[in-house]
Length: 480
Image (tube, rainbow, N blue to C red; front, side, top):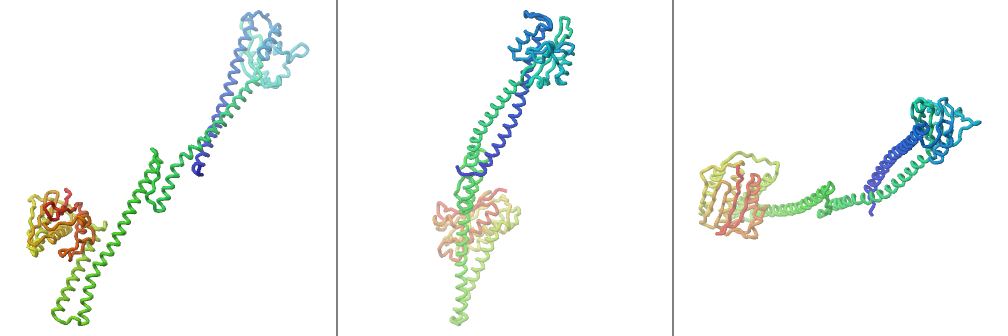
């Protein structure tokens, strides 16, 4: 089993907690068991004393002679059977009878050598109380529990005290045996639970090790790593969080790679787009400066070409600035409540001027009811003008551009050749443009700008080929 610090700590903490619990339980058990054993011994001794007192007081007849002095043989018989030393003390504090003959001096019994608390017990008994004491242990040379109970005559008068001395060696031995069994049980339980705690600790830390390995793989850039932990608890939730993090990091990594590729492509495209007009302008200027071209008509052609290239550069830089602004989340668009029909009519008026060059008809169907949208008038006009300009650009000479506005959609369709299915997924990408005479002056940024404007207004912009020919652009307008 692989060494695990947390598993070792868990095992040690569990063992310490179990040992502390065992000590506490053992101490409580020992205390209660000792008290119970002593109390049980007292109760048995009390029952025995009460029965013996009745016999000796003459209240019951077991065939034994009455009187204080005639009970010696009977008491010795009781001692032999019950292993209990029995004394009888009269009202004058004289020991008249001892069941085993201890304490006899010159045919009499002597109490002068008893400890003080032993005398106190006899005094209490002669006053009618039943009491327990361990004060006779020194006199009897062994640990003894003494019970004292009064002896009465037929009239209920106290005539003496009955003392029963029972060795507590058996009680102590029982407590010792109980303690031994308890200690053995605790040690066995500790051994078993220690093994179980180690196994459970390693079982508990196994998913943690899996998550650690997954985290190390993530730190090394392997975002396909998975913890492989499937538990319905907090550890399972943590493992799921790590797996979710790995999935998102993997997605972010791929997205980062994609963005890096787009960045490289963007730099390559912008470099290419800037290089061509700059090269043309520089070449034309060098030719004019070196007097290579001196013919006035040729000079004018060169100047016109440089002006066209300068205008293209101006458009390209303007489009790049617009796209950069729209893609910046910190760039705020000033939105107000506007009627999309007004924007469309404004765009169509501008579109008529563009359509005249190719003798194209703009067929617009705009409802009379206003369609309100929260947006920037200028940016929405820019988006729609890009789409209409694109439709005019790709329409055939003398063609038609159809525009239809509904309460939640705008349709712009041309009757041109349509979009090649291979190009269709990429037409909204930056600098992506089809090769063709009608698109040679484009920067490849128009549709990318249009989509960015749409996204900032919650408008979904899509493109498809119309079943009856031409391209169809759809703007799904969010309801106010």
